[in-house]
Length: 361
Image (cartoon, rainbow, N blue to C red):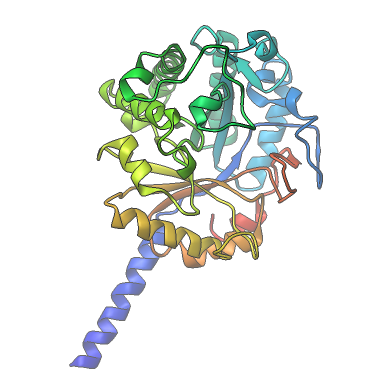
């Protein structure tokens, strides 16, 4: 009888693992830049003028052809990053709403109509013409100053006499917060009104990596908390993944503070792990470690792997074997980086996906 019970338990565990893996949907790429074509070296200094949303109305055919190539590599989901902000110290330095650069000037608190239209047309075309099934639009706020981030270097200096507020109420009445909330609400409402009737599924990362541990206790944490509260109160929760964060050493107290028990239905996690890169050399085991810590803190959600190394066979195998059987992962998006040190992008366009596809992603 004992042997039968043990065998039944083993079958139940196998069935649970298979069920978890079977829920994984085909993934794709974060498609931020479509050129210059190439790989193997850092493209940060030369790819600014190739942002897909800023240039979609100019290089439509080129970008559509790339979408076709991504489709041929079995990519089904698309991440679209938007870099937005208004430099408090020198607005002119960020005035890239003219069709150049990556950062879009949002000093007036909305995404310019040209780029909203470009984003919408890109999503509709990717869905209708190339079969992409789901979209993750991520906001990258580029105008947080040093005091907002709790840093003294590597950040925008504060204007003379300005200090970021250090309470939730202070942040929510701050002009910077209001501009970003206006932008977020306007953009989500615009996408809902135009994508909803077409049955096109999108979600928004409200602040790229604002869920990371190092933001805990800074005005950026209050910013995220206030923004999430507004998203929930305006009925937009189901269109958002909250604020993405890295899988390595998540700060559960920080996440608890942001969401106050009302967590997103999906959490966007960024996972970059290879041998020798972190204290956990296995990408799947790093996800398991993260998942254990979150659940111990009462945080349950389906995960979207919002960033991972580009077409990486090692990460693909590890995530499938060591993470997918043990938690609910909706899909994976690769970021166009192969590992060039101190670099944000070293591949353009992100066409190849065979290693992830071969490993069921």
